[in-house]
Image (cartoon, rainbow, N blue to C red; front, side, top):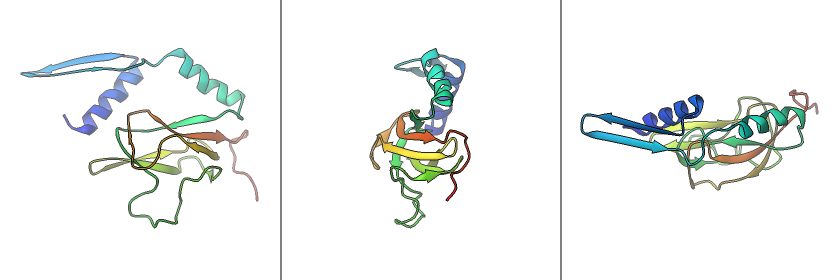
Length: 144
């Protein structure tokens, strides 16, 4: 299996609520078990964010790999993920590199970045929280 296959398998496990999977193909066997299964507390926490915008949301890694603070082709002074920086929905705030594959960590709404939870260059797992994020109350960009 390739890294992309593991990422997809983990994503399916989380979507379907499975905490473990065992696959046998000929003589090859792969068994995966999540440390913690998705639970109602995580869903409840994301629902509370809408009611209490002052509390941070965690921006999570979309893949397993090395955390990068910017796209490798962008200049060093452009778009660094700085605490307090304003971002818009869908804006990449960091990247995760797995071999030649880059996956963006994106802002889910208009808001500002909180503190960095992992340093660039460190290995992160799938769904690892990498930034705190504070969405705007109304979901619209601030004026000025």
